[in-house]
Amino acid sequence: MAVLTQPLNGRRAQPYHDMDFWSNPGDSVYRAAVGVRELQAYRNFRYCPGQFVTEFREDREQVTVRASESFAASRLVVAAGALGTTRIVLRSLKQYDTPVPLTCNAHTYIPCLLPGRLGKPAAARCHSLAQLTMIYDPTGDREHLVQGQLYSYGSLMLFRLLKESPLPLREGLRVMQALMPALAIWVVQHEDERSSEKYCQLRRVDGADRLEIVYRTSATENETQSRCEKRLARLLRQLGCWAFKRVHPGHGSSVHYASQFPITATDRPLTTELSGRLRGTRHVYLADGATHGYLPAKGLTFTMMANANRVGTHVLQSLS
Image (cartoon, rainbow, N blue to C red):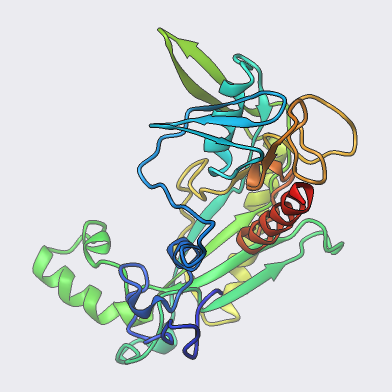
């Protein structure tokens, strides 16, 4: 996890106050704002907040970006999040009603009771981030993994549990307060691959456009994921975690999206080269999840940051 255990470059160490979902004192947990502040120290960097980018236009020597105001550059790197990048690219290339792939991790919550924690006080010092990560290899080939992360419930709001309790409010509050140190949540994620039933396309409706998403999983996928989750629930008991049930929050809840303009070795429309350059353009590069043709179970944050750095390095070299 991108969290400091000791001070670094003006950022403070993790305070272990179990409020990381709500605050970030001292920037102990890395956020994009930390990187922006570091870049603002450079004279050749300009941050322009409040811009709504709609499209780009390219001529022989430069790229013009249309937003709340216009910007011109010799190179453009788009990293607006996979879905944001998809809208910008399809609109800019006039590729309406053209389906592009979409992958998104299946996401399941498994709330658990830890009997060994019953009657014990909550830890005085802890963080709210993942406490444990589990990798399950159901096929034994290290290729199709399932990933789970354990979170304590301490930093989350009690009202979420109270509305699920059959007890009156006052009694329910007392019971939940006693149970909270013994509650945990496993967040289980599965891999996702491209298929003809998973795609998005930009539609033009009444002079405006909207990104239409179609995402249908197969019976085989659903059966495989359910079988893995049942197996995980049995394995969790060996760790002293007794699962209540499995909660499926629905497609898209993982907020991990990818694969719209995948990197490919073959020259095909609406794909990217290994350098990150969008095919069909001269000077436009993509540097986010839209270029990843596959989503593993584990979130790709660090991988995408490393890839963006690689693309940026290539762009810098092309300028020199």
